[in-house]
Amino acid sequence: MDRIRIVGGQRLTGSIPISGAKNATLPLMIASLLTDETLVLENVPRLADVALLQRILGNHGVDVMVGGKRPGDSEYEGQTLHISAKRIVDTTAPYELVARMRASFWVIAPIVARAGEARVSLPGGCAIGTRPVDMLLMAMRDLGAEIEIDRGYVVARAPHGLKGGEIVFPKVTVGGTHTAVMAAVLADGVTVIDNAACEPEIGDLCACLNKMGAKIAGAGTSRIVVTGVSRLSGAHHRVLPDRIETGTYAMAVTMAGGEVLLEGARAELLQAALDVLVDAGAEVSETNSGVHIARNGVDLAPVEVTTAPFPGFPTDLQAQLMALMTRANGTSHITETIFENRFMHVQELARLGAQVHLEGQTATVAGVPQLKGAPVMATDLRASVSLVIAALAAQGETLVNRVYHLDRGFERLEGKLAACGAEIERLSGF
Ligand code: EPZ
Image (cartoon, rainbow, N blue to C red; front, side, top):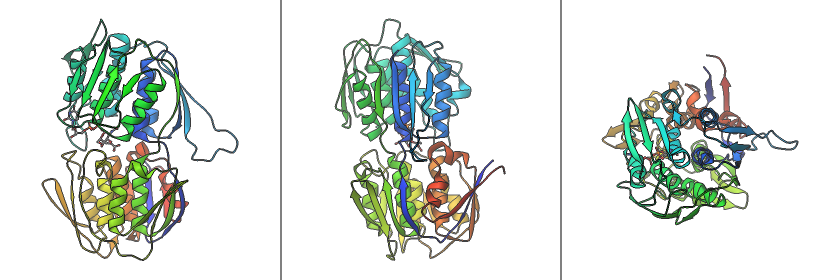
């Protein structure tokens, strides 16, 4: 198993290319199940989760062709996937695959829409909380699917097709909104989705579906209206830049000090997080080529932050912000409202000398003047990268174990940081 070795204390200067968004790529790939024509996705990041979803889709009979690199392409140029679900040969998504990646549960909507029936394993618990699927199933029922739970599998049936309907989510859910939209596009009639998630990745999915011939209005707002169509065609779509990767590197630069251009990043996708970084002492500006972030000699100021659905401060940046605040000049409060157990990084940050006190859903982070490197590991992707951020400013060597978590969501993290002057390397085979 690989490890990442970091020696803290280097400033970061240069530029970091931002990859396509993981959390947009996954639903976009799943949307390919809605058409028998080819969907071409550009700017797809090279990530373990993308490779796993290719396998999962393959199990349903989907062909995925990965475009190669062309001369002159940068090493970070995203992949182009040609995805073709001509025939859905298997409507079952088995436990062994769904258990490894929760988002694969979302295949339920397009498979029912296309084939009239799907059998998808319940995803089970995960490291950041219980993460049920009740709202996803509610959305499917609201559009006329019959749902039954059978030996750990959800069996959803709509033999005569799904019907447009009204879906009111009791709580904002990204996966629920993706599911509702994918179920509604081929349904008979109009679907209104209220309290829909406004995350940019929902907007990206809807933009792609509209290119495929869907009729979706209101994406990016809390009310989405979908007028069902009888079939969808293929399309070309470029995945939007990853706002969580952007925010993560912005925090890394704020932690280590220095000046970096986050190439291809778009500030409006993470304004709440950038505003917090400005409060903490960073300088942020947007240019034609991306977002420029700097911190030169200014002390890190403490902040008060509560995670919230978009456009609020994202839960997927909570761990990284906590790492940053471990070195602030004062005490910060960070409250997590989306997942009930997303504080697995606290005990590992403590190994580096951080002082974090947890009470309920709020972490009180008392900034310390110095962190010290240590061996650490984490149990999810964002928690793992928070340890990398802390390590960049820690004295001496930190070894981050269980790097496979990082590989699920960060493309060549160590290469991107090393190119800006960080002392970071991957040690293979431990
Ligand atoms: C998506 O997960 C993201 N995953 C997560 O990214 C992200 O943290 C999360 O949205 C919130 O922004 C992908 O896009 C692949 P939710 P999702 O449904 O859709 C509860 C990362 O690190 N809930 O918006 O699964 C749920 O438990 C990750 O990239 C129900 O109660 O999240 C949570 O408390 C991890 N019932 C809240 O709603 C349901 O049926 C929001 O979850 C569904 C969700």
